[in-house]
Image: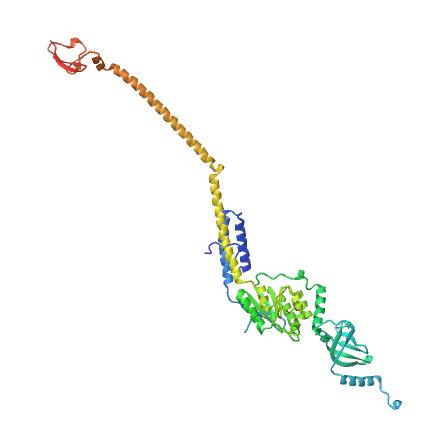
Length: 82
Length: 395
C-alpha cells in the first residue's frame, strides 16, 4: 500500500496540510495540463492523502487538558483531573 | 466665659474634631455631583462632591480606584460609600471613598456606555483589528469556570464536531471580585505559553452585575493585546459585553462559540470523499483526453504520412506487379504465337501431309525405304497410304 511515498505529505502531517495538498492535487488534475505520467503519480498521491485525511478525522477522543500555573508563575499544560 | 478656659492647641483641637467626626461617621453613603476630578500620579483619585448647598472633598485610594466600574468625570451624579476622615495638617475633612457608582437607574449601563465609547474611540472595536480564526485549530484554550454548564456544553460540541484536537481549560472565576483580573491574566497566560491556536472566553447567562467582569477595562485590554484570536461568548444571545466588542468574534452562546471555532468532521469527511471522486473523475478525464489525442494522431495527416508513403509504395508495387504480369502474359502470348507458327511449320514438314496429297511411304522391317537400291526381289514391304497400310512383296 505505501510503496510509493509522497515527498510532500508525511503521515504526521496535520489534517490541514493534508487537506490542502489533496485540494491542490485535485486542482492540478482538474486543470488537466499535466503530463500523463505526472497525472498518474498525482493520482496515486491523492488517493494516499485522502486516506490520510479520512484517518485523521477518524481519531475519536477529545483530549481535555488544563492550564496550570505554579507559584513562580510558570505555566504548564497538564491533564485535567476530574 | 470661654476666655476662662485653658486654650487648646490647634493640634489638640483638630485631634478632638477628628475623633468626633471619624467616630461619628465611620460608614456613610452620600449622593452628589462629582467635580474637580484629579487622578494623581500616585494612582489616588481626588474629587469634590457637591450639591446646591454644600461641598465635600473626597479621596479614593489607589487600591480602590482599580475596583471602579466606570471613569468618574466632572458633572456626573454619583453615590459614594465611605467614611469621613480628617486630614490634620490642613484642617480639612473629607470623605474617604471605598466605592463609587454612577447614580440612577442603569448606572452600570452608564458605566458600560462610557467605557464602550472610550474604547471605541481608541479603535479597539475596529474590524481591521479582528484576527481571522484558524480553520483547523489543534489546541483550543477555553477561559471559563471549571464548574458549571459552559465547559460541558463546549466540550460536548467539540466532541461531536471535531474531537481530534486538544482543549485546554483555563479555570477562572467568572463573577465577583477578582474575576476580571483572573480573566485578563488567563488571556495573557494563554498567549505566553504558546501553542494555543484560538481562545474561547465564555460565561453562562446572568444579570448585568453577574456579567460585569466582562465589561471591565482590564479584560478589554487583555483581549485587545492578545495575539491569539479570541471568540467571546458571554451570557445569552441578547447580552452584549465590552469583551464581545473587543473579541475577534462574538458568539451568541458558549455552544455557538465552540461551533465557530472547530470545523465539522462530517462536513470535512464529505469534503475529502468529494475530493476523492473528483480525483477519479479528473484522472479519467485526462486518460480519455489522452486516448482522444492518440486517436486524433492516428487519423492525422502528419501521422499518416508514412502510411501514405507505404501505401504509395504498395501501389507502386502493385503497379509493378501488374506490369510484370502484363509483360509475362505478353511474353507468353508471343511465345504461343511462335509455337503456332512453328506448329504450322512442323505441320508442313509432317510426312502424313504428303500422304494426303497421294504419296505413299514404303517401309522395310519398319525402316523407310527412300531408294530403290535398298530393295531386292522377294523383300516384304509395308506401304502406307493416307488411309492405311498394305503389305506387299517386291517382284
